Length: 245
Image (cartoon, rainbow, N blue to C red; front, top):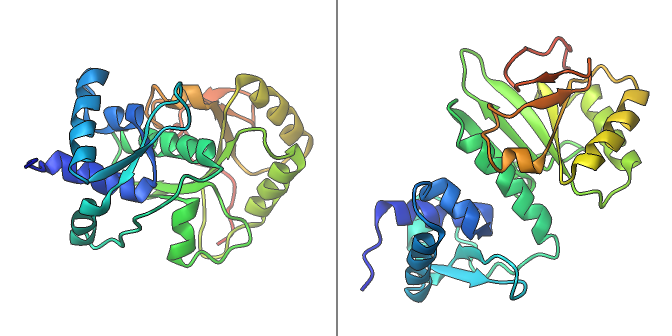
């Protein structure tokens, strides 16, 4: 019988929270010094033992992993609800990108108060008209809170700009320091930045391509700051924008 190690348990719980994680994402979180082959070997054992389930979109796609039926006890031991039987969403590429952003936040040197993806917010009583793709807070002398929009160019520019206008109006009881826009492609960043600048928003908007966050932590990533066109780290400056609360 497979002995489920503490790292395995954390991995199983994380798969439950994230719904689906790729092999690469799991490697980055739990096996940063191991080879891909070693990671795959351990994952196969967890799958064979029923702790994980796996899915592959095609022969050339990377494997996706979620919690299996034997992971139910481990999930519930952590006080979480087991959501076994989750099917692969048609929006799986978007979900994988949001989880890449989650990992960039959670692998940084700054303690994380929380990271909630949009599918988690619905269960937390989120009542605002605008629903971010994710929101997170970092623990410093004072908490720093950010909203995240992951743009895969599947929506029109006007939809994203409308969301930014809503953020600028303020989220009652939930002040944010900035909106972080992560784009799937570099070229999309240029198009978005031009369109957003036309609106002359006072809202602090930071932009970076997903590829940057797949190799660096959120706090180490270089972001384009649309207020002045320069590049900054996310914690370099406190927002001067008076966010409504």
